[in-house]
Image (cartoon, rainbow, N blue to C red; front, side, top):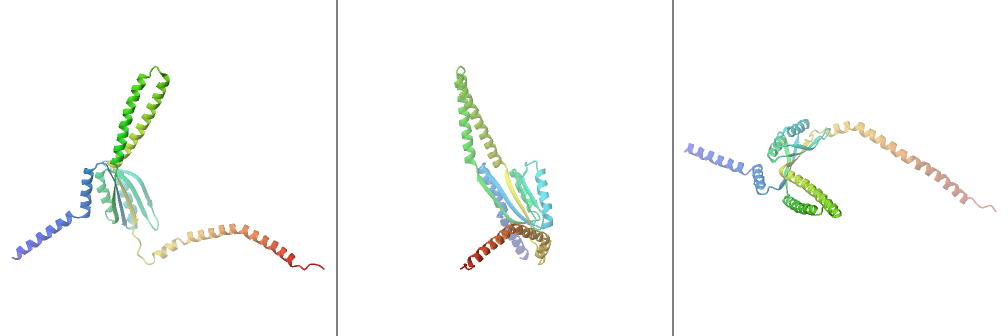
Length: 262
C-alpha cells in the first residue's frame, strides 16, 4: 500500500509539471506567434527586451550580443543601432534586424545571466499597404503597355511621340519608386526587429552616493567657477551703467532741491 501511495504521488507530480510546462508564458507566446505567422504572412514583428546585470558584466554582454549578430550570417543579422555608455550609470542599447529563426536565440543570449526587467513584442499588419502597392504597380504596368503601343503608332507625329515618351519615363519612375517601397515592406515582413536595452544594477552601498559626489566634485567646482565668471562678465556693463545713472540722478536731485536766489 505504501508503494502504491508513492506511485500515485509521483504520477500527480508528473502531470502537474506537465501542465506548468504546457502553460508557461514563454511557450504560449512562442506558439501563438508561430500560429499567427502562418495565418497572416504580412505581419511585421518588433521585440523589446530590457535586462539588468552587474556593472562589470555590461560591456561583456554588449560585445557578446554584437559579435553574435555579426557572426549570424545564416539569419542575416544586421546591427541597425548600437550604443554603449560607461561611467557611474552604465547602459547599452542594441537594435538589430534578423530573420525570425534567429530571434529566440538572440533573446535567450541577451537574457542569460541577466535579470529581465521588461519584455514585449509589437505586431503591425502590413497586408493593406502591400496589397495596395501591388495593385498600383499592376495598374501602372498596364498603363505603360498602352503607352508603348501609342509610341509605336505615333512614329510619324514628333510632337505626340515626345509627349508619349515623357509619360513613359514618368510612369517608369513611379514603378521604380513603388517597387522600392514593396521591397522595404517585404523586408519588414520577412525580418524581425529586436531592441535590447542593457542597464547596470544600482549600487546598494550607503556611501555610494557620497563617493559619486566626491568623484564629481572637481568638475562641479570648475563649472561653478566658470558660471560665476560668466555672470560677472554680464553684470559689469550693467553695473557701470547703473553707477552713471546714479550720479546723473543725484546731480539733478541736488539741483532741484537747491533754494532759488532772491
